[in-house]
Amino acid sequence: MKRSTFLLTVLILSPFIGALGQDSLSTYMTEGNKQYEAEKYANAEKSFHYAVKLDASNYEALKMLADSKHKQEKFEEAVEVYDKAEELRENDPELYFNRGAAYVFIENFRLAIKDFNKSVELRPDFPDVYYYRGYCMAAQERYKAAIADYNKAIELNPDYAAAYYNRGAAKAELKSYEAGMADFELALDKQPDLVNGRINIALSKLGMKMYEEAIVDLTKVIDMRDENLAKAYYYRGEAKFEVDRKEDGCADWRRASNLGHEQATQNVNDFCSDGKRKAKRREIDIVF
Image 1 (cartoon, rainbow, N blue to C red):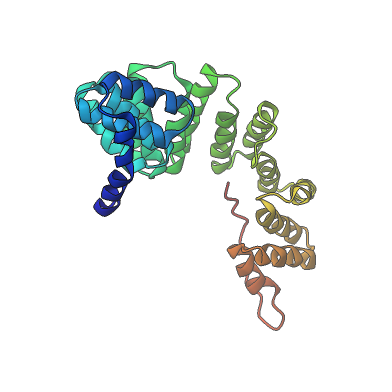
Image 2: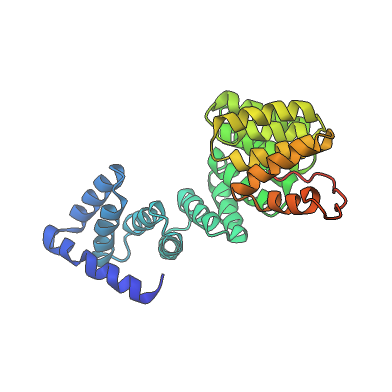
């Protein structure tokens, strides 16, 4: 965060001093925990900020200040405070997990994995740390390592829908579409409202060249009119093109293009424009 912004934040917080007065450290900690539990993270941050002002060596105050920033998506600020807390205590698996999660959101996957490794070392029975480390591995295209972590998360929590879902995506990236589809189905069984579950099942069928079945599934996704609408039109166009329904495929790409799908626009230009030489179709490359 820019220094000028930080100063502005301090000025905004200044009335809070008058509200609480010069009460003890325990008062700030109690109020901060109360606000945090109520999910009023900005208020919690204020309390923990003044607790740290009173005692900069208080580990709990520093960690809760970092957690409050984290909850407000102030990830870089949170990392800075986690660093200070680590100087006071190096054996808290939750600190390493929380800081690792903050690194995930700022896409510093190398440091995230380092923190998750430390968290696993200190607490090997926490499923979330394997899930997040698996996410980092997949983000680095280390899909086999990601699958191993998702396996461990599922072993520790057999109802972990997100872990099944991401494991399915990792398997699909390795072209194991049938195994990936099975995981997507398990994820939906555990959590039926997973937004991307149904479209990924359709994409798995597309990857297996089950084009007619993919068209049926993608049509169902389109009928839902959710955030995957453009993507569903695009991939239904892909499937229709593969079964020689080129005009229908182009119609779907045009719908996807109108919804802002860039690759659909490119496909319309390459394969559907009258009076232009058609480019050669590439093999479908499904991105999950």
